[in-house]
Amino acid sequence: MSEPRIVIETENVTRILAETVPVTLVREINFRAKAGEFVSITGPSGSGKSSLLYLLGLLDAPTEGRVIVDGADTSLLDRDELARFRLEHLGFVFQFHFLLPEFSVLENVAIPIRRLGKLSDAETKVRAVELLEGLEIGDQFEKFPDQLSGGQRQRVAIARALANQPTIILADEPTGNLDTRNSAIVQDIFVRLAKEQGTTIIAVTHDIEFAEAADRNVHLVDGQIARDGRTV
Ligand SMILES: Nc1ncnc2c1ncn2[C@@H]1O[C@H](COP(=O)(O)OP(=O)(O)O)[C@@H](O)[C@H]1O
Ligand SMILES: [Mg+2]
Image (cartoon, rainbow, N blue to C red; front, top):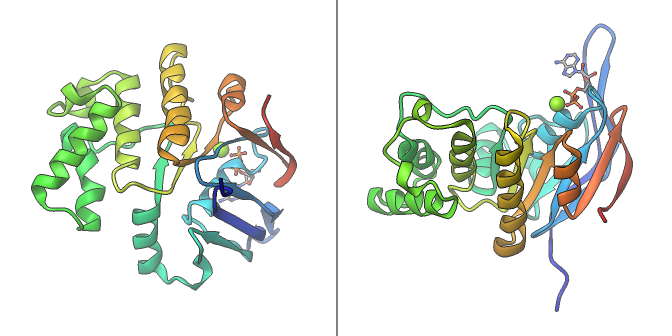
């Protein structure tokens, strides 16, 4: 069997904020992840975890180095191309769900599909419901976010992240706002997505159990990779 392909790679990525006194968020990051790999990112508060995730997710750009996603050198893309690229290749899950309260669960999941504009309205709805069913919240599709539990809302956010079949899901403290039971559900969803669908998961977490459920852990200290290895 051939090795899974590399889906994201950074080459000496450094991000410095041009303040009066410059602030280095991350320094000389060389990171790679393969298709179907689940990588957790840990480190002390302020070590640059969110900064790194934003760079990997093309929500911020490095001051030095490059980020290659799905074979594309993203430094060559302009703002509009980047927005389209993110919509097509990447999915995001945050600590807070950021669902739109005035839209139904179905519409929240449908929004990124509509923005990409590849499916008809009927296909969009079918796809959104299928995603919700896969996360065992198919029966909630007509509800509004404030009618759901915290755990259900986070699953809707995951369905939305999966809407356009991204190569990579980037998550920043996805269980940070959940109880133990719902954290275990989200953890299990990520493990299955990586194993069964080949989605690459890169998740920042301070939850040790969650970090250990990943295939690999990258530990940041002071904006640099201090350790990078397989979990046991
Ligand atoms: N916009 C900003 N201006 C100044 N300092 C920032 C800014 N964003 C992040 N930082 C600093 O950069 C460091 C890394 O931040 P962050 O990536 O959010 O860390 P983590 O997610 O590991 O807690 C922290 O020391 C933080 O205070
Ligand atoms: Mg953070």
